[in-house]
Structure formats: structure tokens, C-alpha cells
Length: 133
Image (cartoon, rainbow, N blue to C red; front, side):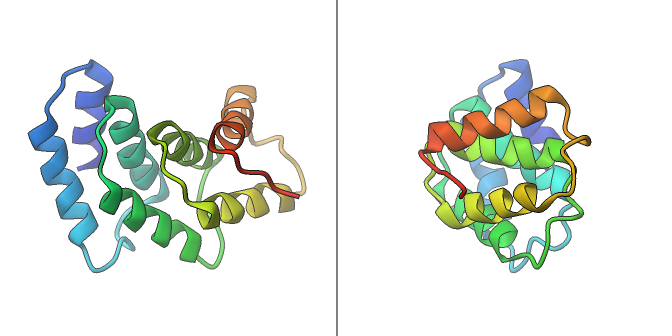
């Protein structure tokens, strides 16, 4: 599902009905535990890139990510894409930004981040009006 949504958004092919069905399906799942971190971030990114609003989908993804015990399974790209997607979609979710910010701040090194991933993450925090002490 995430790849389908991402493919349409990346190709610039507007298909609001398809994205709504994907969003409704994902938002209606009992759990997002079967999704890999990159799939979650790609799904949110696809909706943001396509300019498609789906508050329940972003709420579901935000709840899931913010509720995880740790984010060690998230590669820097997934962290960056998730924050960028929420900020670009204009979705306020302070607990998500707090969780991701705490994870990044707690890393021993930022060497795993490519410069673009790090700058996109910082930009997303600024765009969302979020900060991390």
C-alpha cells in the first residue's frame, strides 16, 4: 500500500479516490505493527507530497510512532521523511516530534544521517513550529 501511494504521488498522478481508500484502510487497522518504519514514513510522505489531507491516517501513524518504546528500527531517512510529511501536511502532532527529537538527540553520533536527511529533519521541526530542548 505504501509503495502504491508513493508511486502515484511521485509520478504526479493525482488519484484522490485511491489515496482515500488507502488512507481509510490504514487508518482503520487495529495496529500498524505489521508496517516497517519506511512503509509508515512513505505512506505519510505520499499523502503530503500529493497534497491529500487525511487526518485520521496521520493520527494513526502519529499515535503509532509516538507510542513506540524506541525508534532504533527507524533509519534516518524514515525519521526525516516522517517529520517532513507531518510538517508539509500541516499536521500538528507534538508527541511525534518530541519522540523523534528525543531519539535523534539521544544518538551518540549523527554520522548515519546524510546531510539532506539531517537538514530535512531540522527544516520539518522549524516548519511545524516544534523544538526540542
